[in-house]
Length: 233
Image 1 (cartoon, rainbow, N blue to C red):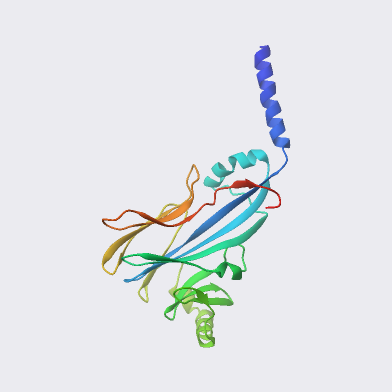
Image 2 (cartoon, rainbow, N blue to C red):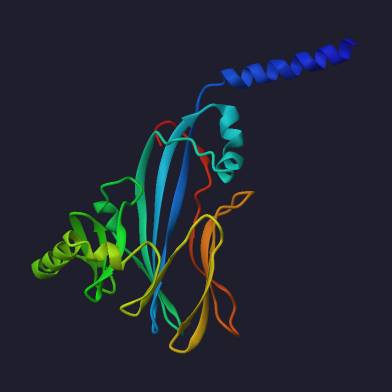
């Protein structure tokens, strides 16, 4: 009886200590993106952000499990940290690191990507940047005016919902919480794009390419798992 009482006391004391434990500081990441493709090529616009939070030690220990269940503690501060464009063809792929995150008004890379007038634009209106094929650049005054006119007339919203098919030859799908797998055809060759999303136990997010007769390739990854840091960091 004494041993049981002593054991219960130790458990309660441990829980009490944990509850009173000083706050710990945690960094975690969140990322995602979208897949656009036509008959010849595919473009992946991938973004990633970092958030910081201070929380109790018990919450920190349970954080990965709670996040996988959708219980995400609000961040104390946030920042956009990555914007990447990946071009995929039937033969290879290219990655383009960009500085688009420097222009984001919202911490989590608050840009939408819109295909308009033969170009892709990163939009955080009234900020508009055009994808040149290797980087984002300012549009010409004529391009900006055409986009503004289409936007005010409601044409862009009606023509470009979140996901769409065959708009000027382009289709789009977003990467969500469940691992989507998309089979597309580029220059007559089948290509499969797989997004590995949130899992338990947690693992980095990633995008893989699968081609017939070739090894699977990871073309993007982002480790958003929470990690403990110093207060200064």
